[in-house]
Length: 589
Image (cartoon, rainbow, N blue to C red; front, top):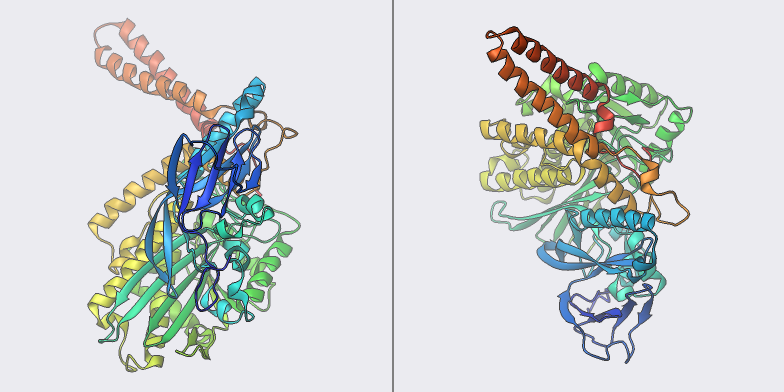
C-alpha cells in the first residue's frame, strides 16, 4: 500500500477499527474500510477481509492505533493492539508517537479443552502478557522507520525508503520483531508497526536567534533483552545486555548534524544473582570462549560504526575492580580497539562532574577525529562520523549517562562552530535557556532507559541536569536505590520471563516442560512465612525482654523468641537466592 506522499514513502494505516464478534475479531482501516483482516477467536487463524467478515452486528466497536503483533501460547493466539498513543515530536519531519497503552486480545477458546496443567501454565503465560502490556518507552512512526540513524539512512540505496516500513528497519532495534512474524507471513504490510524501545526527546532551541530542533533518540537492542540483574554481560554470540545506540540530532538552517554513541554491558560472561543482599556479588564466568565472545562483539561494532574507543567507567577495587581487570586483560588482546579505564567514582565522586575533563583530555584527539555526521539542505554529505565511543559502567545507566552527556556537549559545540552559529570561543553552556533544555533532555533520556532496564529512574540525574548533586536529588536517588532493591529481588524474575516470551527467546510448546517444572521452588510462598516469623519473633522478643525482669519464665521466653528470630534470619540469609523472584523460562546466557 502506497498512501500518497510526494517522496513515495510508505505509510501505515494510523487509525483502525476493532470489531468484536462472538467468533472473531475484525481489524480494518478507518481511512480505507476495505483494508483489514479477521482473527478467529477459537483457533487464532488470520483471514483477509471479505464481505462475510463484517456481516452481523459486533458486540463492541472501538478505535485502536496499531497492531503490534501476535503470540501463540498453549491454548491459542493473542493479538497485541495499541489502544492509546501520544504524539511526542517528529523525526526528520515525520510524526513520532509513544505507546501509552496496549492490550492483548485473547483468541483462546480452546482453553476449555485443556487439561489442568495446561490451564495452570496458560494462566502463568497470561500473567506475563499483562506485564508485556505495561512495557515502557515504546515509540513508532506511521510514515518512516525510526530504527535507522541519519548516517545509515543517507547511505541506503535509492528506493529503500519506498519499501514497507518493517523492511526498512534495523532488526536489532525492533522490540516486537518476534511478534510480527505472523503478520509478515500474511503480507499485512500496511498494519505492521516496528516498535522501538528506548527514548525519544525533542526540544526547540533558539541558538542566538537561529531556531533549531534538538532531538535525542536512544535505541535499545533486542538481542540480549532483559532486566538489570538477570541480564548481565554478553552471550556466546557477543551480544551484550542493555546495549543502546543513542543519536543526538540537531537540525537548523537546513543543516542536519548527528552524533552517535553506544553503551552496553561489559562484554564478558558474568553474573550478579540477587540474594537479598543490597549489592549481590559479581562473578566472572571462566569460559573457554571468552576471548572469542569479546572479539565477536567488537568486530560487530567495527563493521557497523568503525573504530571503537571502549570507555570503562567501573571502580578499580572490590568486585567491580575484579571484573574491570578481567575486561582489561581481554582488551589487551584486541589491537584495533582502544581501551580506556576511568574510575568515575574515584575521580568524580558524587558531585565533581567537571572532573570529566580529565577523561576528555585522554580521548579528545581521537574523539574529535571520529567526528560527526553533517548534511546540508540539498542532502550533500559534508562530514561523516568515522568511529564510535562505547561507554560502560556496571549497569550502563547512571555513570554512563553522565559521561555520554558530557561528550555530547563537546561535540555539539564543535558542530555549531562548524556551521557558523558559534564563534570559536562560544559554547552551549553560555546560553542558559538552551543549555538547560540540552541538560533536561539528556536527564530525561537517562531516566527512561533506566526505567526499562532497572525499573526506576536513573541515579545521578542531578549531575546531568544541574552539573552538581542537590539535596532533592540525593533523596530521589535514595528512593530509586531502594526501589531497585525491591524490584530486583522480588519482581524482576517475572519481568524477565515476560521479556523472554515476547522476544521469542522462549517458545511456548506442548513439547516443552511446564514452567513450574523448570523452577519448582515457589519463592513467594515461602517469603511471607519467613517474613511473618522474623517480624513476629522480633516483636515478641522485644516485648518479653521488657517483661523479663519480672520472672524467670519471661526471660526464658525472650531467649526462645530471640533464637527463633535469629534462626529465621540465618535461614533467609543462607538461602537468599531462593527467596528472590527468579525467572522460570530461560537460563542466564
